[in-house]
Amino acid sequence: MEIMTMNSINVNVKGKTKPEVLREFADMAFANGKVSDAAGFYQDLCLREEESTTGFGGGIAIPHAKSAFVNEVGVFVGRGENEVEWDALDGAPVHCWICLLVPETGGQEHLRLLSQLSRKLMDPEFVAKLKEGSEQDILTLVQGVIS
Image 1: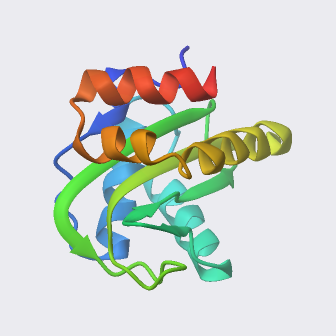
Image 2: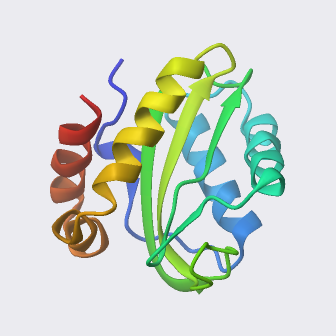
């Protein structure tokens, strides 16, 4: 299976709080067959957020979790109109997310994806396309980074 497909993108995230957004990603991952249990994966995402924020800054967060509920590596991207408080490094709310799903034993893959995406988030053109591009633009953009 591919790490990311068109079904991995939601440009209409409805959540108004961190838990609501994380729940949307867990449900999306389950609907796409990437996780065996949405509630279990949701809990793992929440536990990771308790360790330290995944709010990258500039309106973007990278929620992620290595989880026993993850069937295979996946990358999901979400964007919404709501400004969600995320305890981001810059203190700004978040409205764009890149959610990483990695099996519990996938430590190296987890670090590789996080590193590649974090580096690209320093590129203003990449960020602009992520925040404003079409679903196809986002798919092409992110696949170019993670492949």
